[in-house]
Length: 108
Picture 1 (cartoon, rainbow, N blue to C red):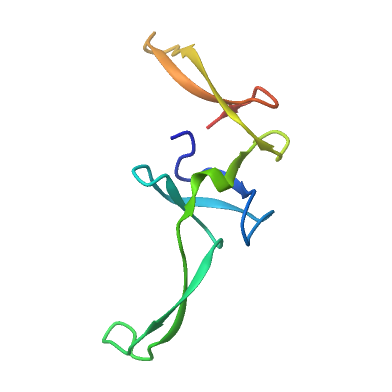
Picture 2: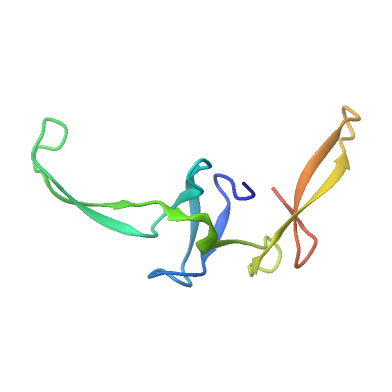
């Protein structure tokens, strides 16, 4: 999967189209991810020892990875992701780095 935890993404399809957020969790087996503040669902909970009040809680639900695009760190625009092999200066080993297709900037 090209999108990882803590990446900034924009939603390109669905009810939250156009909204941006940070990736909280990624589920590679089902190709889904949870984005902060996106795809909120209401859950009705009974009073428990943890939450004695109970009530209605809002929680983020997973969305499909095809409905989001990563934001370019330089231009803050949606972009596709490429990969580039670079040499690590300290160890001399090869590493694969993610790059933006729009600006060529490395994605941390």
